[in-house]
Image 1 (tube, helix red, strand yellow):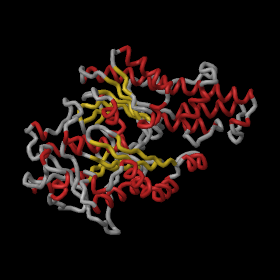
Image 2 (tube, rainbow, N blue to C red; image 1 turned 90 degrees about the vertical axis):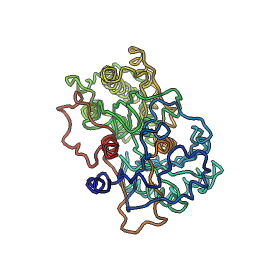
Image 3 (cartoon, helix red, strand yellow; image 1 turned 180 degrees about the vertical axis):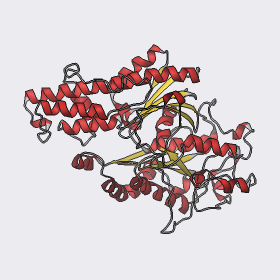
Image 4 (cartoon, rainbow, N blue to C red; image 1 turned 180 degrees about the horizontal axis):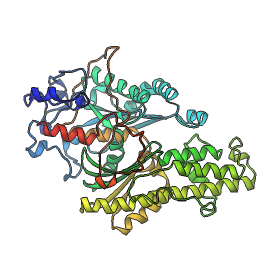
Length: 472
């Protein structure tokens, strides 16, 4: 076992395995109090995180998957309390969630003013903003839950994908808390968290299911076979839909303080969605991938042809100017969502071929807060007798609840790391994964139009989990 461990490449460092004689305590330790659990000695063989798996994958109580079980409401889940920390982009978030799904607290510090000032996310400014508020955000989450760090069971934190500078702030804070109070730490994939938070809201949502994850930086269609096992049916080849909404809002001179998506959605209600004939992207590509760069260019040209000056805020625009902006917003939104619909229909057909038992389409991520998006996608799933599952808007945008809940799901099956040192050395190399795919590509989903910029820094979460299982 040791020899096979040493043979693993460095990119597998977080998923290194320990010998079966390690101190992993399987899910059957219900009889132990949390205090007794925290007192157990924990092996810390390396400086980088270590993933623990149950010593016997054949035992039902330590099974690697939670796929066929409903969310547990047993007494153990009532005792499990996880702090989730999220700093992957422009919101500093923390939340505390109980194992039975009860949200004890949720705190989000927005960077809306920075977004409005720079017209988007400025990584260095975002990092500084995270650093200024992270301690207070976590403390507020604890205070609202009426808990102290000593009453936590574990700490979950986003390690990717996202902006490296921003991810580092959250990971440093999580390691300080976990190290100081001898708590296990759970590394979370941001996009997996967006998908799994739906299982917190919809108790009947079981694997497998189809998920559309849409945000400022991501467009992702994945088939969720199981926890940690995903097939990527489609992704963006250039810009995500959230980026297109943000740029459209900026060029139309809209208020960016609540991000571009809600601003465009609100203005679109005043416009004629058929007035500007934008073309639907990638009609000639019969796959499930997305592209919004061309649509952005079309919007920019339409704005220029109507002499709209973004420096003139919407509140100061003439009635004719406002009407022109509303028409562009409505027409853009219609075509942007038509692109989603077309891709989702094909993804549903592919998913039903692979997993005929799927019953749900989960739509999550910041853009999933858009009511027009929800209404149109609901019509898509009805054609296939599926159910649309959308978390509430406050759980669609980046938040700590989804990180804590994903931590709980992983903790249940033994995927957590031992407590880190109380203080990391100055030259410590944090495990950050800014470009980290969730699943492996579906063969039919590979697109010749895929950008050459898509180089992967890290293997997908799915490939790492599967590789670790093969080492058992």
